[in-house]
Length: 353
Image (cartoon, rainbow, N blue to C red; front, side, top):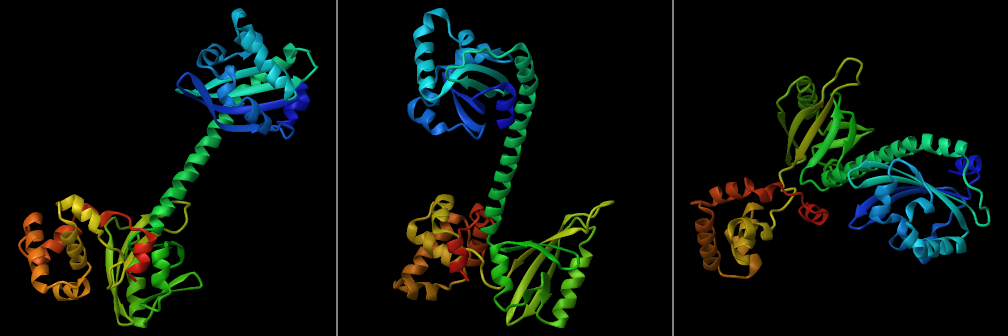
C-alpha cells in the first residue's frame, strides 16, 4: 500500500472488505498503508457515520471509480460537505474510490485520498492503473478470507479432538507419531501399556510390541478398522486402528488413526443429558450416570448417603422410563444414545483418570 501511495501521489490508501448489514455496510477486513492511523477516524466518524457506506451509494459505485461528486446528489451537498470537513480535520483530502462485488452482500473497496490542500485530481493514467489493480485486490481479499476460514476451521477441529473422550493418535505404519490429542498423551505418559519414546509408539512388553507392529502393518490398504488388545501394567488397552490416508504414487507413507482406550472410562455421561433424553428426574439421572461409569447400587447408596432401598426404587423408575428390563440393558441403551457421542470437557476427562 505504501508503494501504491508513492506511485499515485496519494496520502492514504485503504483496502476494505465490506458486508451489507441492513441499510449500511460494515468493515470486516482491512489493509492500509503504514502512514494511515485509523484510530482518529474511528473516534470521530467511524463506519456508522460515513455516508459513503450507505447501501444506495455502494450500489451506484460497483464496478467503477467514483469521487464524492459522483456519490452525492446535488441536494445532499450538506452531507458531503460535513464528511469532507471531518476527513479534512484528520488529514484526508480529495477522494477516489473503487468497489467490486465479491459475493452476495460482500464487497471489496479501495479508498484513496490526497493530502489536505492538494486539490489535484487523479490523472487518467492513474485511474487506469487503479482500475487495473482492483480485480487483483479483490482476489487478494478472497484468498485472505479463504485462508483465514481454513485456519479457523482447523483450529476448531483440533480443539474438539483435544477434548475427545478417548486418546487419538495419528502415526505411520512404523509407529512414528505425527499427532496425538491430550487424552492420548496422558495415556502414553502414565506408565501403562503404551509409551512414546523419541517420537515412536512402543508397547511395554516384547509380546505387546509384536502385536502392535503387526496390527499397524495389517491396516495398510484396508478399508475396515482393525482391533488389538494390549495387556500391560495391570491394565488392558484397547486399540482401534484405521487407515487415515492411503499411500499414493509420489506420496508419503500411509497414515493410520489409532483410537486408544484403557480399562477405565475416559469420559462421563452427564446427568443433564439423561434428563433431556430419557425424561429422568435429577436423582434418577445421577444414578444412571453412576451405573454407566461402573458403580454398583451399594457403592452409589453409600456415596450419596441414602438407603439402598431408595436407590433400588430409583433404578426401577429408570428402567421403566428407558424401556429396559435389566441394569445391563440400561447401560447399553445409554451408551448407544446421543449422550455417549458428545465431546466432554477437559475437566471431565481429567476428573475420570
